[in-house]
Length: 170
Length: 101
Image 1 (cartoon, rainbow over the protein chains, first blue to last red):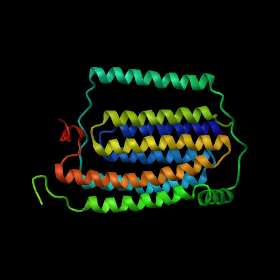
Image 2: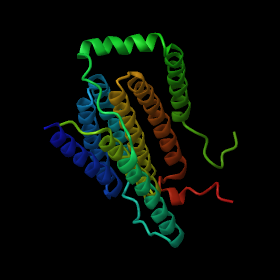
Image 3: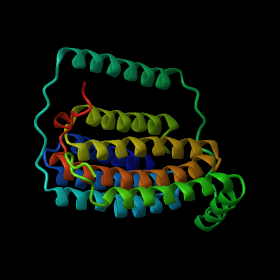
Image 4: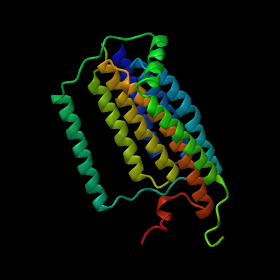
């Protein structure tokens, strides 16, 4: 049953990821990204990371994709020109794909990876665990993240003011 | 029967590869940006899978930080793209070549 759900969710995720890459229209790409994120959130639920699934949907699907859609509509863009591969690019791509497939094959054949740990805590206790970790072990990273968010906010404010025109020396 | 850790890692690698393909292939800056987000989510999936299969919380906490950084990055990146569009009237990467020598 779980295997079936995993197969369905991963197929959905991969298909939508390919949709992001291949769709001509940027709005369709953003919608595919939304579905792909929903698939990843489903996989998180399967991995018992309920809180992270919730946060992923809230932050990514709620905020990030909506922001992307706003900007796409604001700029009113057309799809890009079709891609024409050149010789060196094709060769590099083939080598990279071969390396990736070799690595995955080695992982599948020789990897000694642990089985799933026994299913852990209920949602509430896991939430408490996250909070405990965030306020003890990871207190400094939390502070740094807060500072990063402040800097990003200031940066966006500065960037979104009207910039000087290219020929304008002021 | 639960899926193995290998399957999650394969899926994560495949997602990352698809995102990277998009970054290389597409010419539209916004679509490239969406593909970057895809790569971040792929790394996130691997972290959550490792965390679950090792029975620790550290991977999950790191995913929190990744989500925060991703949100900040999207805000700044989209502001840059909009500023670029205001100055150059285009978001196609092959027309944005003023740094070429």
